[in-house]
Structures are given as structure tokens and as C-alpha cells.
Length: 553
Ligand code: GLN
Image 1: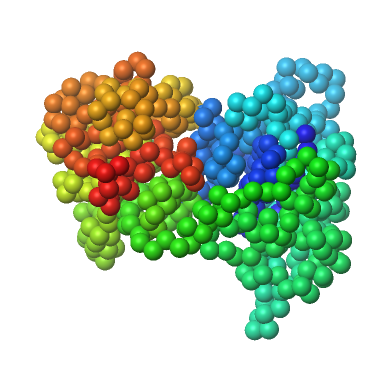
Image 2: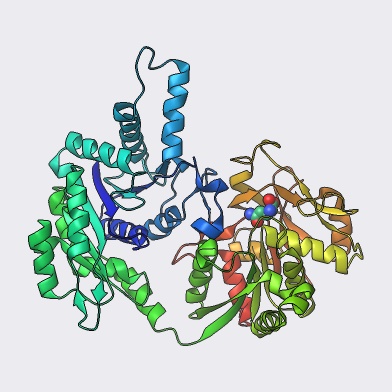
């Protein structure tokens, strides 16, 4: 196993995740099999309990792992299916060491950060890197490890030390360190400044790690003189100084790296030159250029709770992009804060209220994504009602499906107090109820999580046709509440059809409204499995319906 470690210096938010996944793409394009590990030096065991406001979306894996959104980038870029163990956190490492301590595995010893925590980190990395990806029999050739945070952070010290030891034990030609750094431009003169990078490389060296390559983020391409300076002062050959300047879309990053021969420098360091082919990134080139040249756009109203930070719905945004590109359209996402649609806001913030409604009315389709808690729920219900009554294509994901059931029960069945037990424990008509698979008392890892099978109840429904499978589909879940089985008969008599259910027939997975051109609700999250050239069927359906092409499809 060869390791490529990607660290970050100077500031956070440099796009280390995109850089690391792009490196993976280029190595994969050389015919190598690539896996990846993301290290998050925080104390949470996983991302499941973290707020999307603060950290961006919680990405969900097939095995139910609730992980950092960077794992989504890896799955999309490398087209692999990862496991929860591919995301290492300080919390997980400490938990495993403390569990062993309690079992008596270290009896008589003082349990310490060095060597016990660092050993646990090394063992974890080595064993996870050996897991074959996507049904392959053998482990991958290269494991790309991204270390979250910035070099020098107190939190990441045990990881840095473990990685230093790992680099020493696997040997020179099995370890390649790429340090991602920032080259800012200051003042009117516009000089590219190398000092912050020099300092962060020095910091890395002081901790015992030497970068083999530098990946420099900058607004404009690096000047030759900047490269020379970096090479001289950071002790990195000029050919190993890569530049990732701002590009029109992130699919250009692998191309940028390839054009600078990044693969050659990495393969040389790893002694893999003879095992690799020249990289073939024709499909990426086509994808990146297609995106740059899209002329027409489609307006999608995304009605959610966390619209202040677009990373909160990163996979939804990506899935929309994949679907739009398949239709040769540019996505124009109009973010609507659900609470702005509510009648209350007409009094409190009339301008925001008017803008929200205008935005909704001007969109060609409506998407209500997943979410937790009752903020904005009434606004989402109004959006679902608007889409249903005006025959505007609608996709409700998880909470978005529950919203459409509440709305339908209230407006069509006349059950005015219908609600989800999540928002009203006393509701006279609990159309959505608590149906967990896990614990009823703990919050962490207690949801219905990961891949579950949905059986189509009829092949004559939009979803089965779009998935191009009359039988079933496997998608990822993350929820505690579901449509109450006791209301199914009434809802179906009213015209709503539950066309997909789980294997027990008790859990409603997909709903459709046959009298509407595209009104689809899903209890799962189709966005997590959408890939650049394989858009999620239901997102594709939404965009096709929004542009009047669903019939032809
Ligand atoms: N809050 C809802 C539930 O727990 C929906 C969750 C979601 O949208 N991911 O069922």
C-alpha cells in the first residue's frame, strides 16, 4: 500500500478536500486503484450530531456512517463506495483506546497519547486502507489520506505524530506528502506572497514531516519567480510545486493537476512510474468544458431551513448539477428560507416574505430537502401546497416527503390538525410518527441509517420508470420519523399513492400524485448516490419535468 498524505497550511477552507480527491482522480486515471481516508481531528465520534449550519451537511454512507461532507467529494470524484471507518475522528480513536483500557488490554500500563493513541491511529489507517473498494478482491494501490484542519493546530498533533511514524515505518517510496497552502496577493502591487507557505512548511518540518509536493492555492496562476522562491525556501523541487489557481468549476482541478504533471511527481516519489499509464481524463475534460459552456438555465426553488450556508445541502446541490448537466442545462438554484414564506413573516419581515414568494413563483420546480426540527416547517408546507395545486414539479426528500403528507392530509383530507409527532406530540392526526430502528433515548447513531431496499408496488409509476428497474431500488436513509401506516388507506383514497415501500410493507418510501405531472416524495436521500455522469433518477425526473421533457424521456 502506498500512501499520499494531504495536509493544509496557513488557513482553513483552502479546498483541501477537492485537492485530495482530484489527486485521487488523476492517479485513478493512470490506471491505479485508489481509496481514501479523511481524518477529522474533532472529538465528536462522527458528524451525525453536528449542526449543518456550522459544519455543512452530514454525508451518509451505504453502511449508515454519518460522516464529513468531504467523504461525499471522494465518493463522487473517485466513484467509489466508502465505509464509516474511512472517516477517522479523534472521538473514534479515543473511544477505541478507552474501551481497550476498560477491558484491561493495557493492564499495568500508563495509557498515553504516545504510544497508545498514535498506535491506534496508525493501526486504523493501515487496516482501513486495506479494505478493497467496490467489490474488488484486492486492496487499492494507493490510499489518499486527507488530514483535516491546519498544520500546527493542537487538535491534530497526535495525528501528525502518528503519520510521521507511519511515513518512517512504510519507507521513503511508500509515502508522499502533499502540502496545500495559500499564496495571497497583497496591496496594489499585487505581489504573490510566499512567506505564509514558508512558515507552514517550517512548522510541518518541525513536527518531523517533509512535504514532497506543494499544492499552492492562488487567485491567479503562480508566477515563475514565485515558484522559484517557494522551491528555494521550502526545499521542494520546482517540478513538484503545483498551482491550483481559481477555476470556473471544480471539475477543472484534476485537469489542472494533470497538466502540471502532478501524477508524474507523485508516481516518482512512490516508485510507481512503471506501474502506471499516462492519465486519461478525456471524460473529465468533456464534463468540465460542457459545464463552462452551458447556455440555458433552469430555476429550482430550494426551500429549506439552512439556506444561509449552501454547504448544508451540498449533495443536493451536486445532485441537481449532475441532473441539469445531463439535460444540458445550468442549474440556477434559488434559495428560499422556508420561514420567509410563512404568514407570520408577512407581518414581521414583509420584504423578505414578498421576495420569498416571488422566488417560489418564478421557479420551474420546487425541492424541499431533508431537515430536523420545526423551524420553517409551515413555510415548507405552503411551498408543497403551492407546487401541488399549481402542478409545479416537486421533489420532497425525507422531511420534504413528510411535509407533503402533512399538507395533503390537511388540505385534501380536511384533517386540519394533521402533523408530524416530531413537531406536535399532541396532534389529533399524527400522519408522521416516530418509527426508529435504533434507540428511543439516545441521539447519536440512533436513526434509520444507510442503505435500505425499496420495493416498487407497481412498475407503472414515475419512480420505477426513472430508476429503470420495475422491482426495487437501494438508497440511503437518515431519519427517525415516517408516514404513519394507519393513514395510508385514507391518503391513498384521497389520491396520493405510495408506490415504494420497504420489505415489510410498513414503511412508506416513495409517494407520487398521479394527477400531477411530477409530485414525488421520498423517505430516503437520493442525493447521496448521485454521480457526475450518473445523475440520480429522481433529480433527473425533476429537471426533465421542469423543462417539459419528462414525457419524451
Ligand atoms: N426530521 C425527520 C426525521 O427524523 C426528517 C429527517 C431528514 O429529513 N433527514 O424523520
